[in-house]
Length: 227
Image (tube, rainbow, N blue to C red; front, top):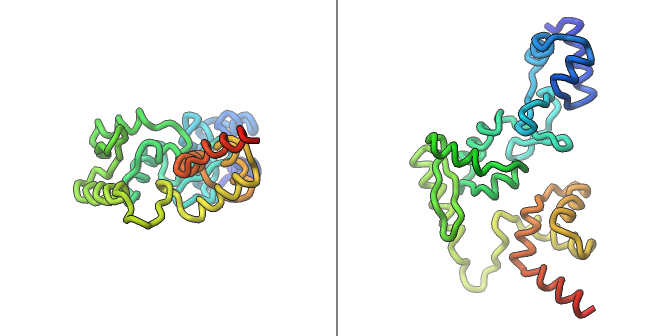
């Protein structure tokens, strides 16, 4: 049961959505322990970026398929910390995840942390053809199945079959190509923001993969030079 002071903290954060401990303490002139007690009674998440300094009430986020939610530049995970989130994403990915794929989902840099998790035996890492590597579950059987599935993805498609950019669905490719027609001569980051504003959350990484896959940058340059 929340006390009157604790309820004020919860009500204020419910309206503000996201705040730091400093904001919460200064707003009500309360101690750190009083604020934490209120948050624990209600339930809360801390951000996995910004040094875990932001708080949100547990019933506010609407997590996506990877268990992630963001408010402006602040990012939260239902899995917990950034370390816990990387492990959960890797373990739940049918074909493991590369650093690029992790960073596209998390929107933070994770290469050093992922390497540390390998060193500590929390996840596995296997090399792929070329310079890239894939991170796999620490469980040997699960990791083997993930690596096998990743290998199948890397195999060339049968002759005559259409191949999509890596980790892009047909719907995502269509949305990206449609936006490229609407907004000419904009960067991948700008296209991703425009799609997000339309309610289509596609990362800039996927936009770049579509552009590279279909060699669209060269075509756009060629069209501009002819114009």
